[in-house]
Image (cartoon, rainbow, N blue to C red; front, side, top):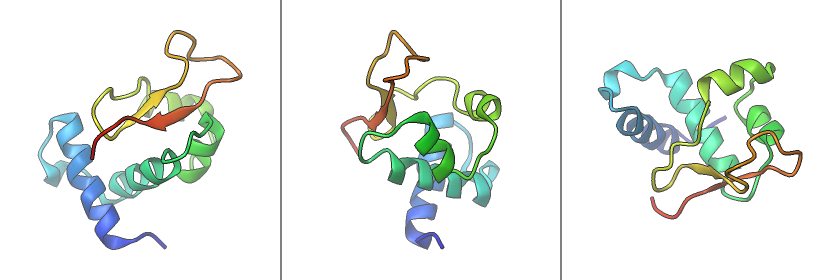
Length: 96
């Protein structure tokens, strides 16, 4: 079960990052964003992030998260020039 304030915060953060009204962000997307942010607090692999977001398909994950947001408080790659590196991990940028 997700923490309701964390999901609500993620909803507004996700809406701001996507530059859309918060009413267009679903609770499911906000919940997935909250799980993504929670998982990326510590350096995490793509597989860890997928698991946190409850996503099975790698292609679907890469479609909805094609590039890191490069915004404060959102995940970034630890090896920016090599997105498919086996050593690639993701961590939160400074901020939030």
